[in-house]
Image 1 (tube, rainbow, N blue to C red):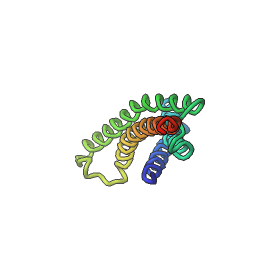
Image 2 (cartoon, rainbow, N blue to C red):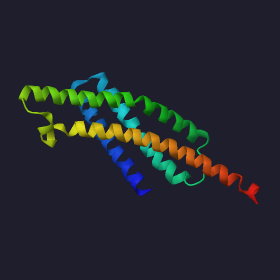
Image 3 (spheres, rainbow, N blue to C red):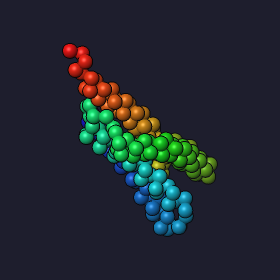
Image 4 (cartoon, helix red, strand yellow):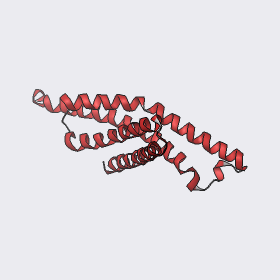
Length: 157
């Protein structure tokens, strides 16, 4: 369980990094897309934070119900839709690296980490988003199964 929490915290940190980067771009350039990216990154960071909260407050046998379930479902759906933004970010970073590579004549694999770190962070965020979404699905199912077992334990006696 500690690995899951560490992974979620890393996902939150990377999403906040990109959110702050988008916020700085919004302040400097005033582009609407920077504001959209900033909000999207905050929503991407909110899902693992909500997952840690659910894990700590509901595990092992309390089902996600009521307002918590409604908030979870909305946040989960929005984050599934935000996968398109993450794919776009990965391909935009790759395109930028390829254009720099063609301009300099150096393979982008040979660039120092200081140039292509955003590409690697984008890949981490995309893969992490898939892992977090899958983990949240499994967590909800596990909590539901455990709560049903706990609710109907008296029938087995």
